[in-house]
Length: 377
Image 1 (tube, rainbow, N blue to C red):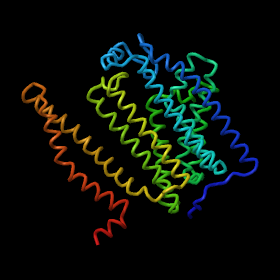
Image 2 (cartoon, rainbow, N blue to C red):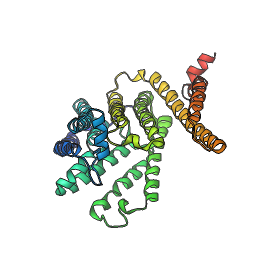
Image 3 (cartoon, rainbow, N blue to C red):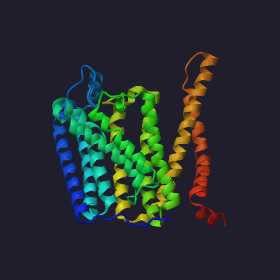
Image 4 (cartoon, rainbow, N blue to C red):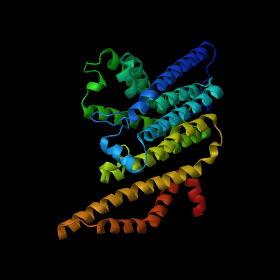
């Protein structure tokens, strides 16, 4: 049975309570974020002589690297603070638009609050900088951090109409929120997830992510109407592009670990590119909820699916071919050679167009069957 495309509307006391909670959480979050900017700038313009270092803080080697690039510590600090500040303001600006336009719509109000929390607390900048300076803020920051992660996971269960679909996801969401309680009331207890083994924690995180993805697929296939499907497509497009960019950015450091150290040119460029990629998430969420130009996204999704899958396949193949050829050359000659890299690059270049055509055909058959059949006819 399909639900209506309109989301749940809040009225009377519920609307007043929801708006009050939104304004309170947002105000507290913005104040804490503002408090972190000064310590953040001071930390980034200070060289880290002994570990642990702060977020994006330069080691002595990193400081020498930016000096060779003609940058000062002050400029490096200002650059990173500006990225964090603009990212948070962009998330909050889109959240304010949703609040202003649709504060009586439950899913719009919930999404806008999740955007505020994500833009401020997900980079973990605020908590890492404020806790050493203001230890008394630890309980508030911990609760807001937990609320950030819980709000994001729950959003997958209820987007785009504010209902838990399938219904059992409400129990999963309740368990996820309940697991956060021991972190504050019983931090030393075995019930606290922070005291679990890495394997158990990783398994739990993977399981929750799988349920989130299943919930969206199930909703799209079984429950959503035409408008809700277009809303889902917009959000999937934003998340897909972001994930493709972040995954591709993480590949080069696998071969050269020094690339992603703070202060390297690669790190500075990737931070900027990742910044724009992450902004697609609140932007597409805002478009989906405000329902503006929903039906223009199919071509974008098609291209994102094709080139995202193509990049993943060719990237994996490139790694396999390079490793195999390097191993073979080393076994035959006992030396390393750039021939493996050159040969692998030529193989990937030769496979690009055939692989793109095959992936395009697969995507069209699987997700755009009517258009594919029409083209075949």
